[in-house]
Image 1 (tube, helix red, strand yellow):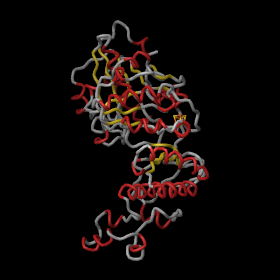
Image 2 (cartoon, helix red, strand yellow; image 1 turned 45 degrees about the vertical axis):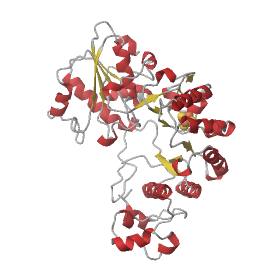
Image 3 (tube, rainbow, N blue to C red; image 1 turned 180 degrees about the horizontal axis):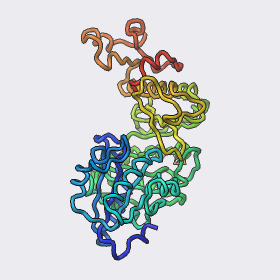
Image 4 (cartoon, rainbow, N blue to C red; image 1 turned 135 degrees about the horizontal axis):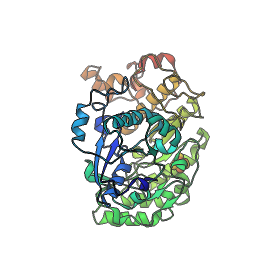
Length: 435
Ligand code: SF4
């Protein structure tokens, strides 16, 4: 239990985000904020405990060849003379376990004798493995209850949005999803209006529409929007399509409340397309632009490339974008997939499902990227040569004003999103690295 570690001898706590491979420009992106640490920071402050947050990057810990204990200048600057009585390290994906392990090793070296706790998603999904592998003193499983009651310490980061959970857990048990393990209890808040301190709100709920008080929450947001107290709202997860279909009026409320970029999931087979189309229609009827809607698609899982590619073509027909999610087993602790490997990779590098191949994975990713560009720009073909400005300006202008039928025999890499594309090894080796 986290609270068992907060004894009267604890006056200073160091909160650490390992050097996950997140590009520096995305560090403060709404998908990567270490919100758990910010909540713990605020919680500890209610107990008059000093906190310091450090967010490591590759300049701090060089992990390419393992831990190098003699090269920590940047990190020492970040830590200055802070002397913690307790250290809390967060974790995200299981396949980023090595970053947590190396961070714990370094902190152990630097602060010998100071207890180190590891929490977060990886720690909660694989507590025993995490404790043994990282060498931490204790794994903190799931959520820290006291930290749920406070406004996170946003002053420790540089963001112009806040993150809110109206629920914890999920009412469903989809295959391949770890939410049930991490947040086994289904909890719903009735009101969130008193938590709002910024104009941009990002909901981290796993299934916000399943909140039994969702109408109340949305009405609060609508009132706040009318009063110009909020300007932007987004749900990081998709909306539950079955609930949308049962209560289509929720889509109108989402629109009125200012939600942007709505997402739904299409994890089922191609033949379920009519149900997905109805969900999209509900969002479009509520006033959302189809090209702002995105469909989550899990690939490298039990549906093969042909089925996913058929679904992609359908999404183009509907002019919606796709958010592709490559499946990794929940207990996978490494993932060395690289989009830049010209000769491809194997199962030794990353998880490849038996129904998939490395070529199919790269091809599908590339198709999705081109599909989304075409949807966003409202065009019916994509060309890398045009995108990379490899065509003389005059000619490029003519191509840009032409449609696929007009350019397909003139532009060698013109690619139509409306067509089913096979996994073509030639195309794969030609373009691998371009995704
Ligand atoms: S609805 Fe989403 S969060 Fe809930 S179990 Fe399914 S995948 Fe997980």
